[in-house]
Image (tube, rainbow, N blue to C red; front, top):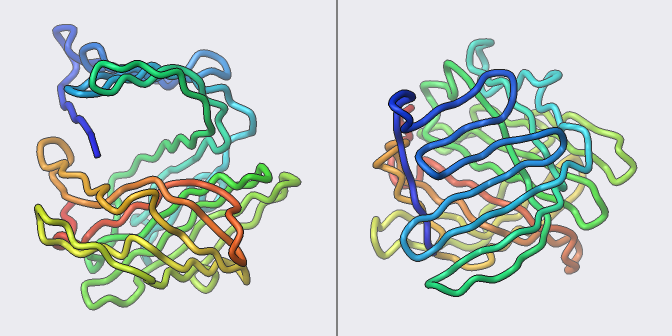
Length: 251
């Protein structure tokens, strides 16, 4: 598992972020969009990547037309949209060896002034690109006592139709846990996800995908690549994010 992080304020040519379109840069790291094409570039220690991604679907507006509630009060929300099923190509360099890669990606854009309820300890979240062209985002906000404070998401079917998901529609059930040898935090890295009558099995590509982001976001959490299966057959790939397991999340 390799990851890198940077933080900088705008000015003096160190970092910049433009309004009105995706165009963010920190030193030589960048994420920008021109028309229906994204460009990503970053390098950190043992790895580097240069990727382009073509948009193939309309944005998936989360929540109520992009207004995504995270708790019982109206201000506990974010503005949030996703770009699923991006067609990606480019190169990845690991320890000096450069490889050409292709695949399917997911890009989220989310911003908020109050991201989570004060009674929440963290969240379980997943974004899945289905092999049939559909997409799913689902999450639960977990309280300090383990109870569900809020839940939601959105499903896009292969035919393009969509369904919003409420608190009664989403349930994550741990199937297997992994304990970090560094932080001693225990994460439910394998899950059963019940979504509006459908049941999916989520398994990580590998267990050790813990991120220590205390240098930037100030948190330790697990965020990793996963496979999604239904009735014993793989149906998609995506990401699983688990926060609040290394201590109550502070934001």
